[in-house]
Length: 178
Image 1 (cartoon, one colour):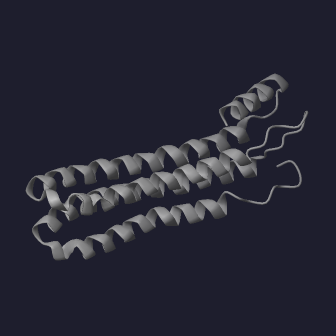
Image 2 (cartoon, one colour; image 1 turned 90 degrees about the horizontal axis):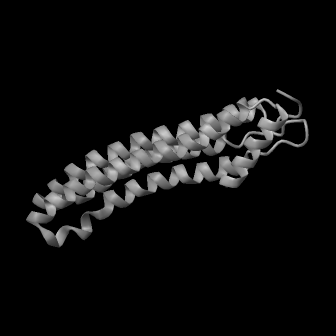
Image 3 (spheres, helix red, strand yellow; image 1 turned 60 degrees about the vertical axis):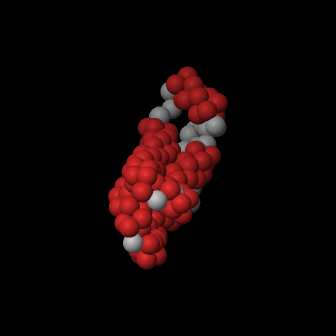
């Protein structure tokens, strides 16, 4: 993937083709992965703090309380999926004519931002709920199901971004130069 990116950029620089659509496309790739992983990292760290604090009181509940960490990790996978799909669909130019247009670049940027920023929001929600939820579950075990339901709705925010990114990021290629 990295060699494809570098060879495309080198070709563009040598032949003087417009590089702007490629910039927007690759910014979509980066945005998807970076923002989704920020959300996943925050959710993992925040939930991990709650698990560690709860584990001091009730170490037998630690494995049961790993659910928020797993759900936060899935948010990062959403960003990875879109990054790979978008990055693989950016085509290198053919001769003097570009094979990638503004429309596609903007669509790929929108897809990356959709999944990335929704993943960031989802990861933050999972972290806050996970931290408080595992601590509360240690005190009152009947709260476990409620915590899982809230986590599912927080995870759904990232899933919405993934669905929108899949729809927006796979537009039909334009037939003429845009």
